[in-house]
Image (cartoon, rainbow, N blue to C red; front, top):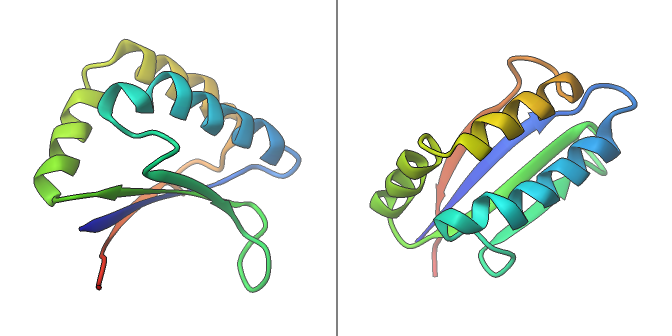
Length: 104
């Protein structure tokens, strides 16, 4: 099992909009690749982390499952449109993926 963590930084004053967009993405787009509230959680910085940091953690059974989801996301026009709607609200170049192995 793995946790795929996607991080992004909200622009100053835009955090609530980014969070709203992330929730919408999970309902409307992520669900198309099997990412639902059952295997995904959203986090935001609180203590010892930047308050502007927003992370999405997705639990996947394998790296192959993650690759399949990424490949499907790349074909979804709704995902591309969502990304363009999100862009004005985030700091460019801050998005990144980190993959962690779940132990026991």
